[in-house]
Length: 130
Image 1 (tube, rainbow, N blue to C red):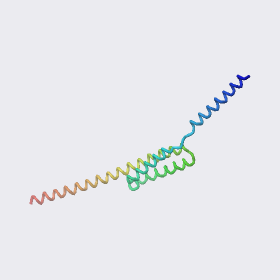
Image 2 (cartoon, helix red, strand yellow; image 1 turned 90 degrees about the vertical axis):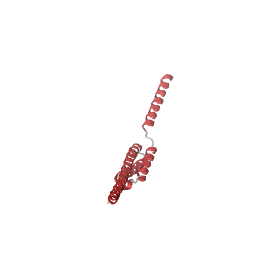
Image 3 (spheres, one colour; image 1 turned 60 degrees about the vertical axis):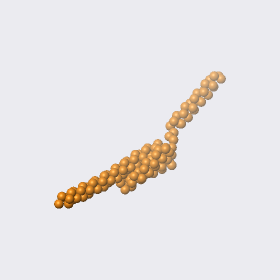
Image 4 (cartoon, rainbow, N blue to C red; image 1 turned 180 degrees about the vertical axis):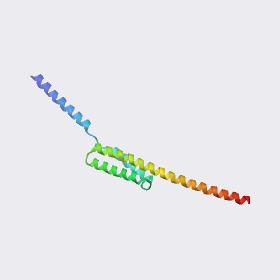
């Protein structure tokens, strides 16, 4: 009789322990790092002048980050993690587009300067040849 009760108690303890282990693994921790990383990516995009050069991607990044924060407040951590990751990607896209646009503008300015110097050099050569 004692053995039967002992076995039954051990079985219940094992079942409780297994249930706790499964529920512990199933719980998703708050994605604080993901949200923080997305915020940093958004700040880098702003520093790269994305507001001017990539407003759509920047707006999408902001919206997704806001939704990620709301999901965190609602304790929907998996949704918050996905949204934070998407916000980070959108912010990185906005930064890349902005930096690319700035580089194109700078290249155009350099080309304009080169063209002006060539023109001056040609005119100086013609004036010297007269």
